[in-house]
Amino acid sequence: MKKFFQKWLLGWLGVYMYARRGRFAFFGKNLIDYIMKKALANNHLKAFSPEERLHYQAVIESTHLWHGTGMYQYRDGSAYDCFEQILKARSLTPSLDALDIEIGDAYTISTSVSRIYARIYADMHEFGGADGVRRYGKTFIWAYFFIVSLAIMAVYRMKLWRSARRRRRFMTDVIADAEEKWSRKVTQQPFVSWKHFFTNGSDIQENTGVLIGINHEGTRHETSSYIAMYEVRLASDVPISEWTHLEVPDSQVDRIKRMLADANVDTPVFAIEKCEEYWSHLPFHEIVLSSRVTRLGASKPNK
Image (tube, rainbow, N blue to C red):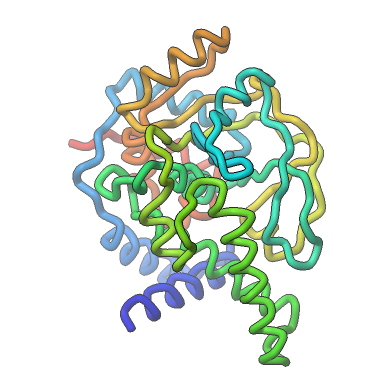
């Protein structure tokens, strides 16, 4: 019962905030910020040094989009080093994107203007799941907020409330896509639920998430209105020269830096735990709505 209310409460909160973006009542906005800041509070996050913080601020100022990926994925049932392939190609390249029931499958690069939305896709690559102690908000909590609100809006946009049969078919299609075209990228374990998937992450040893900042608009692919709530799907390559930085777990920073050096790539790499601490200083509504102006205000280190 707790899980049910938690999931749908966060989903409806996402719908409300998306619908009211930029038009919040002062009291409502501050109440949501207060409640969610208390709920997401994490005193275990590492902070940037003053020099690192200034560097990170300068980098994200030029970041327009975010893309979550990982070191390894499955292809035809076997794990392969997808990040190494990205480095060899010297770009992100379009791949099969699912979960757009109206438009259908397409070859695109899934990105977002919201860092935290892209982070859940990086986190799903973590072997055994991302450590909640090292994140600002557990991955499944953010998945509930974004994915459930997206599903609610899909029901509304497609008028599925008119037919129980169509609603059941929609949910069946979504779960099938999630299992066969999405979760299978990182785990061979059966799809049980969103919480189970985002809590347990990848079953590939040594896998880790990689969050990529992008200074690139590119050619946008048409998507359904509910997908466009949080995603920008690109139909063209994103070359390494248009990456602003990478965020990976602190334990993986040196490993990723070596891979970049071997590929003659000079892209900054930051520990995601410290990036999480940086973003935790922003009000909740600014984190999820991704205001590029106010996010630079998160410059005060912990005292």
